[in-house]
Image (cartoon, rainbow, N blue to C red; front, side, top):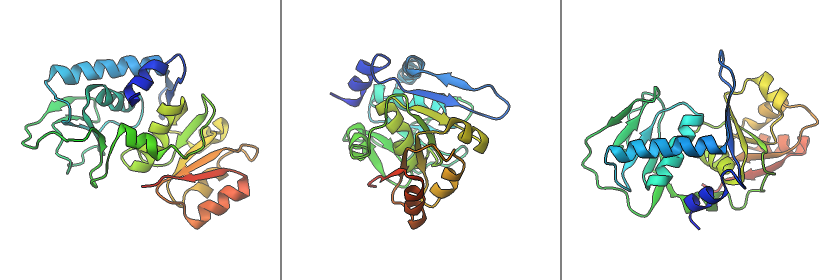
Length: 241
């Protein structure tokens, strides 16, 4: 079963991921699986209406959150290549289309042939994975309970954040929290933390001491990360990329 078929079969009846945005000055925005899926269908229809063909690249400079996640799933629906970008970044990936930080869509002239091999995600540093390869990357990471709260310190435009937070949450039905302050991090006490190497100790200090869970590091934990996880009784997994 493909990743798309798996998501379609399980959202929201079985695996039911959600994305919760916490941005300063705005009310929390909660998007359950049904909203993520229906929004992705709208984005997929937009991309199709502009004649994008399977294998062509879509640059996404949206901030992390609901619309970013819907765009990733839309690319999976259409067989397009999702290229995560920082706002204002000039992309080496040469996307055929761009969705900027405001949500505006622009189609670009591009002489490059479509990607081959079923690539879903391509980063500017050259790393590229299919949906099956993304599944393989998280295959050995302990599976959280359905609905587990997930927080990410790793940027979503980098492999650690996209794989260790977003794909992990979409695959296992996590509750992915975005834009958390230290106070909100403490209040929520997430059960899974996706951290940049060297940052785990600082993140765990923001959590209640009674909370334990899983820390996901990409690509490899720093010595201090290992010590912090052991001290707090957290499981620690690293992503093989």
